[in-house]
Amino acid sequence: MSKESYVPPKVWQWNSESGGKFANINRPISGATHDQPLPVGMHPLQLYSMATPNGVKVTIMLEELLAMGHEHAEYDAHLIDIMQGAQFSSGFVDINPNSKIPAMLDCSTQPPTRVFESGAILLYLAEKFMAFIPLSPAQKAECLSWLFWQMGSAPMLGGGFGHFYAYAPEKFEYPINRFSMEVKRQLDVLDKRLAERTYIMGDTYTIADMAIWPWYGVLVLGRLYDAAEFLDVASYTHVKRWAEMIAEREPVKRGIKVNRTWGELTDQLHERHDPDDFDTQTQDKVIKT
Image (cartoon, rainbow, N blue to C red; front, side):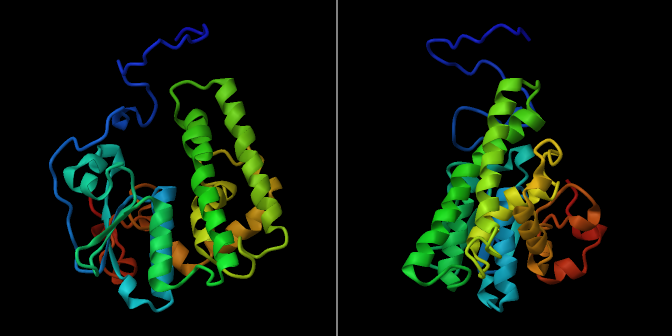
């Protein structure tokens, strides 16, 4: 590839794949590529997802609700393999026209309620079950501010830093430096927030923690992009303390396994249709892909 400065054309056109890990599923148009209905299980909530950071937010939330005793939070988690383009099926596009995981159907309503975007799903579940969200207007506003902080900030970490540092076909100094600077600024925001607070909202664990942890918590634990040393994440001591504490929660340990298709076999549960799936997790319980 030429090292000369790129001169944008007057009108951009999609002539070829851009390269990188996700090039085969990136395209400049929306809509379904193939007809395929989605499966529907027996539980009130039907989740269609994969264990990316955005997908993990929701499975953690559902496992936390069940641990609290909310029986109506029982769910079926169907695997949507985004590397195989399953998010472009006609059934999935009907639930999420943006073709991004996670997406959810609440079949306890008539007609079933569709919810897409991970932050919207967290908020929907929190309000449905009146859990993990403050009741006072001022505290709720603060919680939602941090929820939407994550939704707005994480693309800098994922599609920005993660893409150029870990997935791009070539590494270039400018984008890596630009997004590294922003990610470190975001970590500093969190570190200062958590310096005198147990959780994002103080002493109470909320959907703000569930949204932020799968991105920034996992990053400082060294589990994302193999970038812990590069970003000097150990220096964010308050974020690291918070991340380690949440990682020890049993619902979190369960949630991060659901719809996971990589890593150690014992860390994978490709689909979850019953609470016993975690207890009987063997090679026979994961779906071969």
